[in-house]
Amino acid sequence: MSEYVIIVALIAVAAIAVTGLFGGAARNQFAGIANELAGENGSTSIGQAKTAATAASTESAKNRNLSNYNAQKDVLK
Image (tube, rainbow, N blue to C red; front, side):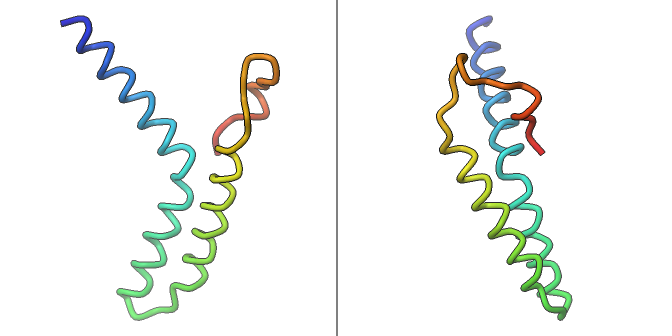
């Protein structure tokens, strides 16, 4: 039973990290879709989603380890 709790906890931590990293892109993408469905121009939100996705991709490509970790700088936004 304890193994399952550990596995569920690891999955939850991974889901939180992915949501924190790509949350801005997903939020802007959904805003653009909602604007398009409402008959408005959603290109601004979709452009912001592309920018957020590019920033998240760049951030995730950085090599991090204990020697270059800075908790104050690496806070997810």
